[in-house]
Length: 305
Image 1 (cartoon, rainbow, N blue to C red):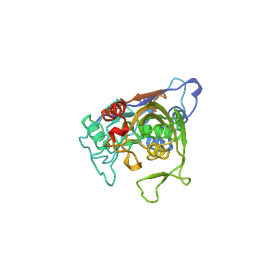
Image 2 (image 1 turned 30 degrees about the horizontal axis):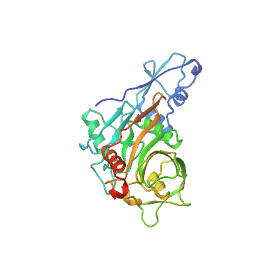
Image 3 (image 1 turned 90 degrees about the vertical axis):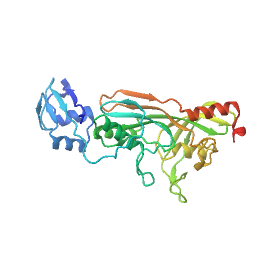
Image 4 (image 1 turned 120 degrees about the vertical axis):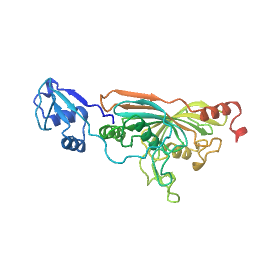
């Protein structure tokens, strides 16, 4: 079974005399839980020797951290295709196909993207618990990120909470948007009539969506959408409340010109949990939405509907 490579740090002048714990907290943002795991596993070395987290270090000392292995049964591996756009020791970015559930649920206990990812790693001689950082609806395509160990997940999830991620989607909505760009600030709550639905409600939680018109079609609009919050069905609910439901999104009033909602996770930017660098990825538009746009340009929504 392949190991997660160690994390390293060379002690700087300004870190002279500090405890190992202080240096690691400042450099890698380890959580208290991670420090407990490192302590239990005796996973920290300085200049090749195991040390306590309270040990003092000096300029030029070489700190090495061996991240604890994941244990447990994990996800059941199943040969579900996964499209890997990027992978390293800390995270993996997939290009999700529409119609695939991300993680097992009561109604979808297996045959999910998570099962496929577990199979992909097993074939490579690796074992990781499945830790999704971002999530997509079953019928939304595009970029999705999974962390490969607990520390990466904690750092990336922290970025989500602090809104340091940048995510953009492409959506095809019904009708012609009046403004070329706008911001939707409307709280979202679970519907009291149907627990699967979300609605705009003053009793809901904060939800902010930004949009910009990319192309005006015949009876429809292609928009690029950015999320400042990550509520369930946020784009779908906000656009429907605006009077422009996503094409194919029959759950929220969209016309059935596509077998799913016309929504694609196009762009993702994050801060890498290991070195703090800014990384970004972009996913090409899937064939079904591309074909929809071609038909709308040629015929318009009235002829197709």
